[in-house]
Image (cartoon, rainbow over all chains, first blue to last red; front, side, top):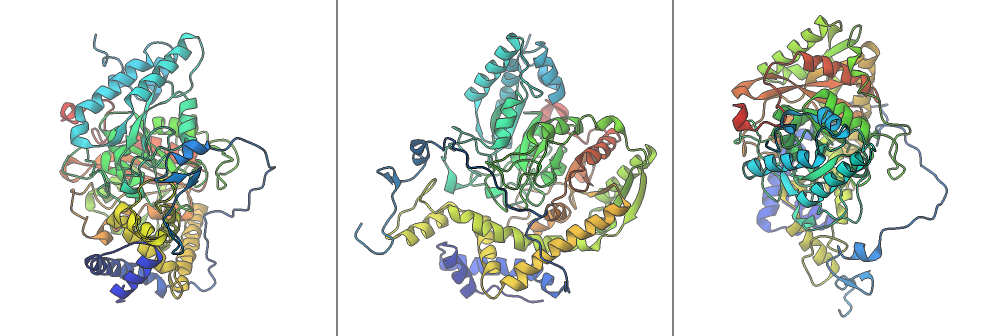
Length: 100
Length: 495
């Protein structure tokens, strides 16, 4: 079955996935992803009526436990890994267009 | 006397015994491993980082424990290499990605903690395909690793550095992770033993997530017994992993000598169709060897397994697209600035991720997006049910199944890098076990084209690792001379 991952779709999913791509990359990935999608597309033709989807290998249930007070990771150690921090918090560029 | 004299030809069992009884110092063992690494690492590039100082300090602590008359544990003084997607407190953990370069985790993975408690010595973090996405270790931001048997060939992947580190004789043991074959495929390519345990047997706490419903940590070793020893040490319930199964680790070491008399072994016929002749011959010879020592062997058709690859390349990217959303330039790793948060995120991810990771994130985002979810993702999850059911029906007639690990021997560097689909096909026989959550392992058995090793894969039902290891042990006993990487010998010494 011929399936196409169009350049427009690549641009669309790249935006959803927060990936900045060049035009050349869009074309390149469209070709490669079309080949992959063409292979996995066979799965759509399988008649799996009555087969339940499974998201996991085993039947898992929520794990509950008593709330026990225990030490967390050290805040300073965690923040040391961040690109930019301020007053014990992560600092990021403007979110809604306010002044930096 | 050279410091390498004693430990050179010792496997993990022998090293632990020698260290526990005071016959050899852990420091000597570790110095020896570091020397072997220094001699060959320029050619092989198994490691992202070698933790020399930390390793020697840990070795001294083990030696001090022995000197006090106490027992450091079942892996006393054994040098171990860790795939660089396992978090190590105070030691950089990169997933071979630019986006995490320089990140120092504030905690240890549970397996790292358990290794240390067992007396093992971590000597470094091994190279992988970026975020474990790949089958050749060529997708590393820090350059490929090479196969110790032939430097022009890939070690397989994604745990290629861990497989090659054992095959090169650097260390007797290493850990990898297996989402669709990332332990078993490189084990087969490198002539070592590689095990994917039952999903949930080994804690994933501190394993950087790729596809959470499929990921599982497991051992590499030169012998089946060494792999059993390592699996026992890392398995068992962990409250920090909500998918961790209840109970203790599996008992596999003591099961090895039980033999295979009366065990029913099924050869998965469907896998033989797509494998090279030398690989098919190896599987048939392994089956014949099992029959000689008392197993009953028959062929079995499980055509449903052949749908696994397509399901995997929908499910794994879908989960990856969600898991990798955390790399946003805010809390750790790389940040490339932009005028607003969205632009900063997009530029950071464009700069930080390699091509294969981007492909999978986009494919995963696509199959989860409105309009495609039912056609692809939900359908793939139905195939997952189908694959598990087909395995379980086969296990009504057989105790274990066997087949090839890979369709061919190790391929050349660069051969498949421009064709993602061709690369994906090398995981055809390993993926179904991940979808079902069942254990499977690869055992070196024969030599194929170009004198390269071929692994035979043993499959078992969930939590039946003990039966799987018994069969693997019997296969190992019949393996062709020279098909397995010897402990502690460099390639030049071997050939």
